[in-house]
Image 1 (cartoon, rainbow, N blue to C red):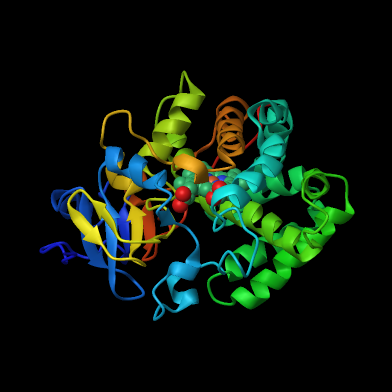
Image 2 (cartoon, rainbow, N blue to C red):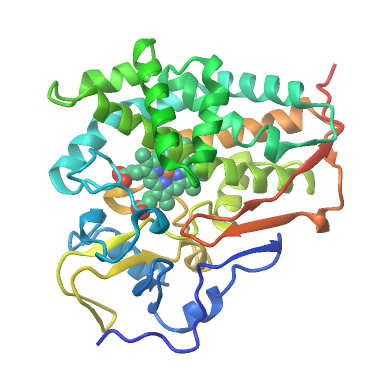
Length: 372
Ligand code: HEM
């Protein structure tokens, strides 16, 4: 039977903590076994998978679906951070099976590693110009850079005009308090991207003609928002690390290490059992919410699941890694005087109390002057 794990505090808590303080509740969660049953933020039980081996099995198990049509009926969709069901909106994140595979095939060429490598120079150029314009400081890079830079990069890629950057920032920030207004903003960004040359049009061309423009706008929203939310948070931790340590020998390894220690998605998105499923001896009835404790399994050797695994593994992982590496290289090479404007011990991270990850509250930096 599915019973609440005793002595396990809810891991979905809001709060502020130091950078080196562990994720709240994670130790007890892992101590509860490979599957811990805790209270979901929207109410009722949720099964949290706490080992890397079981996580990989769950993330490839066709009986455990991302379609939000299977979510508990009493959940408030907005409060639970649920996307529309697969029938309501065509989306990589909720489609399953052959439809999902076809959508992935349509997206794959635009986010392929070779294409991302070809864009590294322009990403560095973008980072250099944005940091120069933000400097010399003191400036809070969380307010002025970590949201704007990933939105600029993905916007350039898709064909969103740069003049719409403020609108993109606004749409992302309003997603939590006014999702209706945010989605209207994203639809305008999608329409603008499709009117320009860029990968949005290329994606459109690879989808069947029966897919409507409105549906393409939703696919573009997913790319913009999924990329911003995560890369934004990662940038804060990455920049803080670069500003408080010796310059890295291996930028790619540094990026991966930061993503492992401070995963921007510390839990996967919601999944739901489509039928009765037994996981490590725990029987989950149909419709049970399941998430993987990505932050917790990072302690297992060689087990980073920062980008997920299985059919829904992050579609933008190569883009994200290239974007993050470009910023590190630019900061180290072109801004040798950049330093924290406060003692590192004063930096704080904020946990949102949902599945989403923590992000730095502020990152005050000074000496941000380009090398002559
Ligand atoms: C450091 C940055 C990033 C991290 C840590 C990250 C993490 C993840 C994770 C863990 C998943 C899987 C969620 C699950 O299975 O429940 C995912 C999926 C996804 N990510 Fe990312 N992501 C990042 C950046 C990006 C970027 C830049 C883009 C867009 C261009 C993007 C687009 C997506 C999409 C579309 C999916 C859904 C894929 C599917 O369901 O088939 N991500 N991401």
